[in-house]
Image (cartoon, one colour):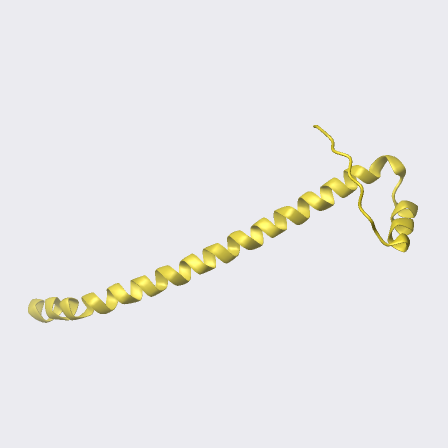
Length: 81
């Protein structure tokens, strides 16, 4: 895996606690997993939003179709009785 080195500014107390808890050899991998998980969660939320929006659109479409065909359906049922 190709690595990219970046510089970010973080609050000093956060960095101190982070470095105190996590050994030096594990920090980059931990941050990479944390960021990867965060990005995946954002993607899941966006996909969920899109699915919900699509379902709402389809519901409106199905209701419109149902209204258009309700009269025809009623006539067919009356004729078959």
